Image 1: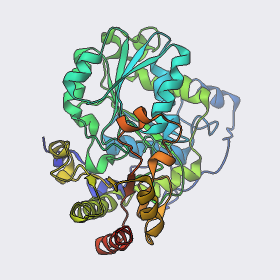
Image 2 (image 1 turned 60 degrees about the vertical axis):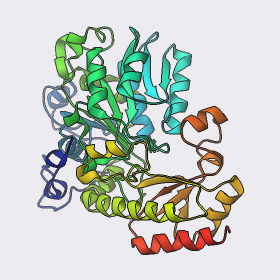
Image 3 (image 1 turned 180 degrees about the vertical axis):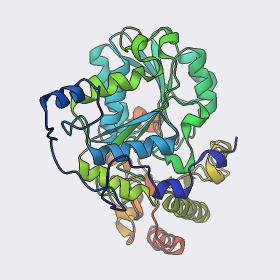
Image 4 (image 1 turned 180 degrees about the horizontal axis):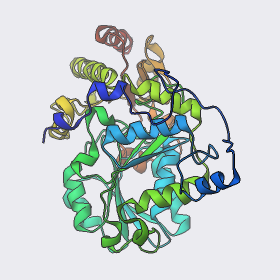
Length: 416
Ligand SMILES: *Cc1c(COP(=O)(O)O)cnc(C)c1O
């Protein structure tokens, strides 16, 4: 399925529809304040009762944060968005809004390490997860049982780089009367709008491509607003289904879980994201094209044993990149170089690429996942997530493709 028509235009990225009086400012200002005063007690009461729009306390609402939320909802084609202090907080708030003891989740084995660790932690609260190795619609259908409350997946998993079929998974989840929740961090609305493919809730670690410059940690939850919570019959105990219908998830999220956990986004961080968002389509284009060029070069290098990039024909998930605008396959790739020592040597010899645990920066980044973000996972968990002792993850940046390739070439040459 082609998705060209459904990704937002560059114009939409640079012209948000701001609802606050900005005094003519071309960019949403930072409302760096904890609380908002009102001239009468009655007015503040109305705001607390949700009977009048307005701001009271920045954990619950702030104009700069709202501008980011509104822009994300619009770019994803969702009903509403809720910004969080981090991608991890977004995942936690989303899950806690929907789950109770005795429930279960179906998710892929190859997830972001922090999410795998969170799923393990939920076991103490009586919530279990069935991890599926090959996340095909058939395997997911087989893993769903009467206790399953949602299917959760990354669209391009980090760092396994498994690409899932969003439309097929949405259909599978909906056949079981449960929603599909996707972590679209590695994809962004510039490659795909998952809601148009049937996903019900979209989560981003906006610390990555959305911020774009690696300047602030943040996350966001976008509610598609289409899942029939009431009709499903599986959420009556946890959501205000009768009162809010399709908006029941956001109603509980914003009025309870997210507000009570307090993992709100700082106004300055929302502003950094608003600023980053404006150039997202331009950056993703360059990043994806650089990643493709680097992957093609690495495939020809004798010092590299294996290249994993969904944009390569050799990837088992290559055909699923057709879901993405222009068939773009994202900015992350992994390589295997034979041993941990060689992986460390490669990283130590790179001059341009920075060795740090992040993705989605303007700069090319590398990391040895087994000794860093997966250091606390056992070998079976690591390998199910596509992490081996000789794996190096690369998050490709905005440099000239030739410069990135030259950097890897000189570093790989030292391994011979
Ligand atoms: C980074 C990341 C997260 C966690 O986000 P933080 O902002 O670091 O809390 C979740 N999912 C994916 C796919 C990520 O890459």
